[in-house]
Length: 275
Image 1: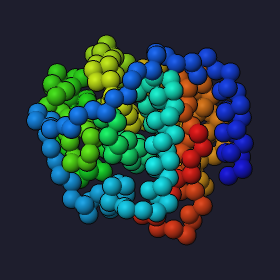
Image 2: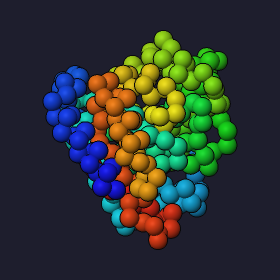
Image 3: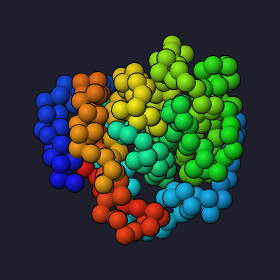
Image 4: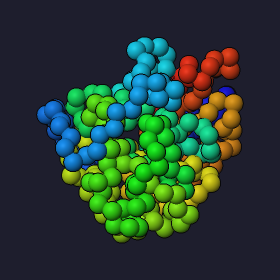
């Protein structure tokens, strides 16, 4: 992993002078929102066994797995508040490196606090899978809003976790880059971004090196979070991924997934954070 760490340090050194470190808007006051009663938003109580099987952190009381995501939550919120941001995209260089699980657990962890609500948007439109983490069958979602004018309010789902709401991806589509940068999508991002001042929006994005989606969509996020997997992501892949988005949006940091766990079970997965 020395090569990946070297690549991360090289990026962090160059990022110090990046103009994107300047806040895109003035930080707002982060007031504690009142308790929420979901009326129109559909509720779906996911069985604990499903959440645990899919490694959603709410079913674990303690351990390195939980500590890692709490550290990630704290670091991400510090950066968001410093800059007045509230929209984060989660991506990875390639497939199967844990970006969706990271996006889910980051969103869930953020929603466990009382200082903000959280909306997770499955925007990996060629392969939307976030709904599967919560044991949901194939359901309408973002693609159906963008292509078929389904009201977005009818697509949101509250899976019974804190202040957390999910917008599924819906059906898989092939022309995802064009759809993600359509005027209708950009208007939706603006609506999600500004409607509630205490809401954080997390977008689960496709892998950077396999589609043009992240390059096309990243300017409409405030920052990106990069997920890499020890023993799988190469330093060259990480450098290529960083270079593609460098100058487009700041990278909050990287999540080093499955760090030092060759003998561990999947349920004991840990994340080492480098922010």
